[in-house]
Length: 293
Image (cartoon, rainbow, N blue to C red; front, side, top):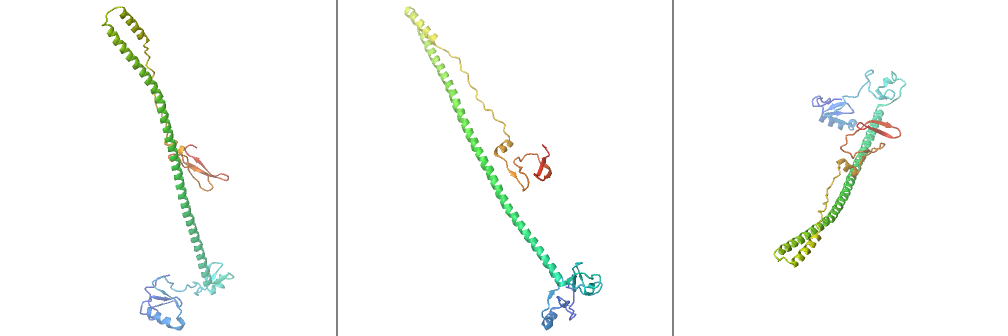
C-alpha cells in the first residue's frame, strides 16, 4: 500500500494521476478519467482518489510471477494457479475473492459480537451502578433513620431523667425547708421570751414576779432545738462513651460480592485489614486479619 499523490497520469503522461482505476490498475488524471468512463467497455470501472491509500497493483506470486487468484485453505495463504501443482499439491483451495469475502465476513461477525458484548456489559454495569447508587441511598437513609430514632430515645431518656432529678430534689428540698421553718419558729419564740425577760427586770419583785419567772422557765424548757438536718449531695457520673460505641449502637453495614461472605465495613477507623485470601471449595473466600489473627 502507498499513496499515489505523486504519480503521473499513465494515459496522457503529463497531468498528475489523481485518480486510480481499480479495474485497470492505472493512474488517471481528471480528463483521462472522464474519457475512460465514457467508453462502453470501461463505463462501470471503479476509481479511487489517489490521496487515499491504494494498492500499487495486484500482488503476485514471488516464485511463479503470477497473480494470486486462489487461497490455500490448508496453509491459509494466497497462491497462484501454478502453486496448486507445486508445493501446495493436494491441498484444499478456494477462490481468493471468496476467501477474502469469508474472512471479512468472519471479522465483521466477530467485531459485531464483540461490540454487542461490550454494549451488553456497558448496560449491565450502568444498571448495576444505578442499583448500587440506590442501595447506597437506602443504606444512608437507614443509617440516618436509625440515628434519628436513637437521638429521639436519648432525648426522651434525658428528659425523663431530668424530671426524676427535679422530683427527687423537690422532695429533699421540702424536707429542708420544713426544718428551716421549724428553726425559724424556735428563734421567734426565743426572741419573744427574751423580750418578756427584759420586761420582768423592770417590774417590782414580788410573788407575782416569781410566778411569771417560773412560767417563763417552763416555756424555755419547752423550746426544742433540733440538730441541723443532713444535707443530701447530688452528683452525676457520666458513662465513658467512644465513637466506636456509638457506631455499634447504630448498627453495621456490609459490602457483599457474589460467592463471598459479608465483610463488615461499619468500623471505619479500624486498623484491621483482611489478608491472606484463601479460596475454599465449600465456603467461598476466607480472610485472615493481619492485626488480630
